[in-house]
Length: 153
Ligand SMILES: [Ca+2]
Ligand SMILES: [Ca+2]
Image 1 (cartoon, helix red, strand yellow):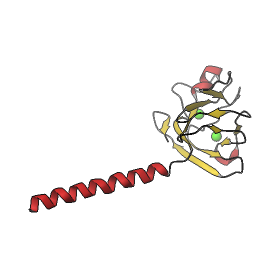
Image 2 (tube, protein in one colour):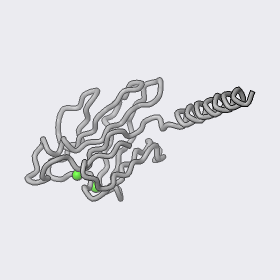
Image 3 (cartoon, helix red, strand yellow):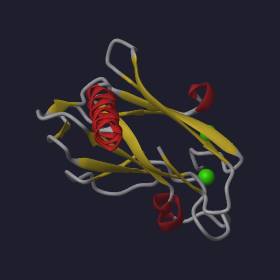
Image 4 (cartoon, rainbow, N blue to C red):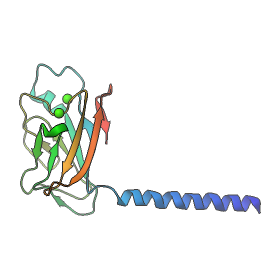
């Protein structure tokens, strides 16, 4: 009997942890940051398009519907750099887009900030923030200096 009670308690604990987990999932931001490469491998200088594009941050649409990103912005610490999504740009359900710092042709999977002479994400630490068209904070992610140069938001 005691063993049965213990097993029942374990089953209940499992149930609780599962439901806590689904609550956490429900609280996910509709669009959230993922891989954040603030300090790609190798020397920053001299600057090249390849190096600028090796610096990137990913965004994923966590919802079951497409989200039109018109008016959304990605900002760094102190709004020193502000990225505006192209008008009408849409991220499909569960899709991920990579926002590169440099220049290139925008596609459904890759976007380009358009910078040619400066990085966006400080190697010593920086905070990425995604703001809605009305200026509401949708998600933020802080990179603190690590050897890999990468934060998984
Ligand atoms: Ca950097
Ligand atoms: Ca910065």
